[in-house]
Image (cartoon, rainbow, N blue to C red; front, side, top):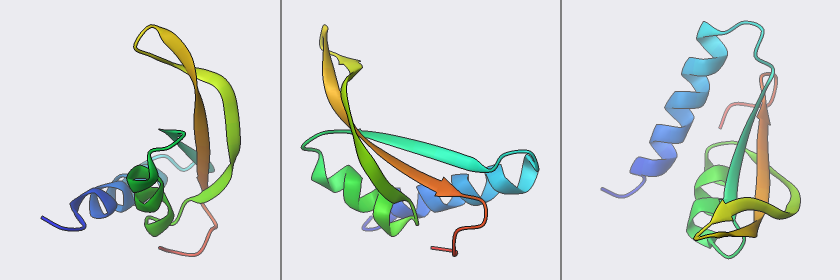
Length: 77
């Protein structure tokens, strides 16, 4: 089903901001090079903030990750 991942991320973000009034920021990480996941984040209203070098453990080593974030008061996706 096309667009399912984007819809799921939007729903989780909306739910989290609704049920947790103290939550002001959500972060989403993808592996560098995973362009499909990056597109999902952007379509779900997250903003690309940068690369975290050697940040995530993956297959026994630390790899670079792309940080996306969405704030409670960001425009709706």
